[in-house]
Structures are given as C-alpha cells and as structure tokens.
Length: 530
Image (cartoon, rainbow, N blue to C red; front, side):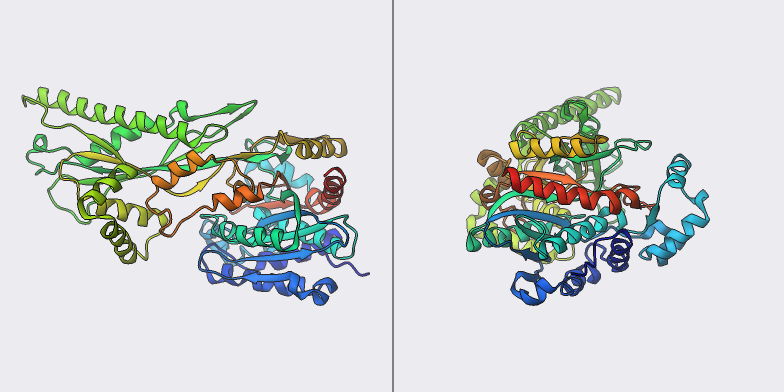
C-alpha cells in the first residue's frame, strides 16, 4: 500500500496542484475543476476498480463532484462537503500573475516579510506558512478530506465516506443546492444512514490578533432584504412638487444601517451589524428630473431569530422610515413656505405587489411578464434580475410614492447542531485531543452547511418564497430535500489567515501536520458513537 496524500510534503504537493487551477467563481476554470479533480482521484486504486462511485456532475445551475468510498457491512456514512471556487485576484495587483503559484508566492513573502501586515510578522516567523489564492479558503480543506478519503479507500475507516465538493460557494451556493438532490438520491438508492455532515472550512479569526483555532457546531444565516422606491417625479426647479426616491432610500438606510435591534448575541458570539450593500437611484442618464426610482439592499446575518421575526422588524422599520421621509419633507416645505403635505407613502411587500398585478392582468400574464423580464435581463446577476422584475411590476401601481420590500438571493438558513448528542460528543472528543481548539456555535462566514440540515419552518419557507421575485424563477432552495437529509453538522478545518486578501496563507504545521490525524480520529469516533 503506497499512500499518496498522507505526509505533510505530499499534502503540500497536492495543495499546490489544486491552487494552480484558478477556479474563480463564474470562470471556465471553475467549471473544469471537478474534471481535473476526478483525474487526481483516479490515481487511487479504489476508484480504478469502482469507477461508478466517482462522478462529475455538470449543470448550468452548479457543478460538483461526488466520490463514494464504501465500507462493506455498514450503511453508516459521513458526508464530507467542501467548495472549490475561490474569489478573484485583482487585489494582488502586480502579483496577480503568481497568485495561484504556491511556490513562487511563498518564496516572495519569505524573502520580503515586510509585505505582510505588521501584526502578523511575529506569527509568520514562528510558523510554517504557504501562500496562494484559495490555499486557506478552502483548498487545504479539500486536501485533508482527500487524505481521509484515501485512507477509507484502503479500508482504514470504519464506515462509508461520501466526498462532495461543489462550485459557487463564494457567490450563491448553486453547487451545493444542486448537489443536495444527488446526496439524497444516493441515500435512498444505497440505503445509507447519514450520521454526520463534516465540513473543513478553515478556522477564521475572531479579531485580527486572534491566534486561536476553532471548531464550529453550526453556521450563521444570511438574508438580503431589498427595497424598490418609487418617487413622485418633478423638475429640480420645483422640488416640492414631487418626492425624490433617493430621499426615501436615504431615510430607510439611516433607519436600518447598523441597527442593533437586528443583531444577536449568543454566549460570546455576536452577529455583524446589519449594513447596506447597495443604495442608488435608477436614473439611466443625466437630466433635470428628480430620481423617480431607487434601490437599496442590505446584508442581514442571523443565528436564532426566525425569518418571520426578522421580516416583521424590517417592515416595522420600513414604515418608520417612510414617516421619517414625510416628516423631512414637511419640515423643509414649511421652512420654504410651502403649505400642505400632498403625499403618503404606501409600503408593499413583493407578495402584495404580485397580487395587485395578478388582479390587474391575470395570473398567466403576470408569469409571462416575469419570464419576459428575466429574458431581457439575462446578463444581470440574481440581484439585478430581482430588481428588474420588481420594476416591471411596480409600473402597474399608479399611486405614488411607495416602497416595495422583497428578498434578493441568496438566502442561507442559520443552522446549529450544538444540541445534537453526536456533535456534543465530537466537540468533547476534539477538546480532549487538543485542548486549545475552542468551540464556536456558529461559523461566521457563509457556509454550505446551511443546506445540510433543516432549520427553516414551513411557515418561514413560505414567507421567503412568497417575497422573493426570483423564487421558482431561476432560484430555489430545496427545503423538502433538506428536511429529508437533516444531518447533524460539524466543521473542523485548517488554520490560516487573511482569506480573500492578497496575503491569504495557510499554516502548515497544524493544517497538514496535526489536522489530518485529528480528522481521522474524529470520524472514527463518530462512527463508534452513532
């Protein structure tokens, strides 16, 4: 038996090959990555003899690879998930030509440590670090999973392993959303018992000086509350004859931006504050008409609050912001000697707006309008497509001004398995092996584990679907399939620093020295107690 992904040098060699594939989200290299990884896996005798257990799945909705290693005599299976896409390299500037070359980039930083942020130079000098886009996030995690898969292929693991690596995690998780159906199919066809979903996303620093290593028993959720503002147009020479859409957008941003009512604290963990991702008017060219429409989108992270509870708060804030805009208008009008307040601001949800348009033109015509709008907006991303649909439907509302609330993709459920007996046992086991690894209840970066277990109620799923213009029109979350999978989740991965930065790097001693053996012990423990 000749192992090829066992030692630290072997894993570094594998990592270098994985990083050398510039699998930036949305590029051709991302699309072909699973084919190239399939060639790597075909080096294992197991897959030469069991080719039907190794499959690449290509789809416009998201590509992925599955590799199943079967242990005879048991149906217990651990699903290992990872993602192979990476963010772009424009931040590397003149170094972007070597951003995917681990050897050259590592040599450069070793020779020029002054290029590193000053707080990290001491840590850098005391460790064994390598650099490269995706080295930390998360191709090192793929490498250690492949090492585990190789051991299983030689019968050294006491259960089945299903390796699933997906595209698009850095954007909308299309790969994971597509892979769910295959993971569920394998469970049903082979009669598998999924005892755990294991991810190896890297340990993320809580603050810049943090040197701790973490395991995660859940992952944070994300929603994108979005707003379309329809103002009352007027000439700039008569500003009080209309209502500027930008004023409404500004009022809502002032109300929502950093609003602590939407933050959560669980133990020592706290969500990042609600913040604006986009706010702009929708004028296509300059003229002296005030902006008739505007858009705003927000990033809202959550842990245990329900989508329903959060939506209720968002709508309350929207009505408050509408009143703030009107009060601002009234105050300024009085100072200018303008009498009366000729406006009210109505607030619609997408569900309300859709119902109004269906009433006006019929269900079939409303759906045809969505399809025609999406066809015309084919070059837009999911956020842009959502906005275009809302704009088209808003044109059927005659009374202005008004605000439309809707959700833009993506939606990530918050999940936590910290109360699962198997996950509690795994966390205790890891601490007994390496006491300095700390447990966190929620992985603070978005993660495909959101789709591995059920956490969204039927009521909340209906709320989300009903207020997302793209739902079933190019974007869908398979809530029912996720309910059937419902796997406990656990994340334990490599240690590094500066993900999504030009100094992204991986610490080798832990990541390829300690971690592979720890993960092997972890999965063996999981099989024993399940």
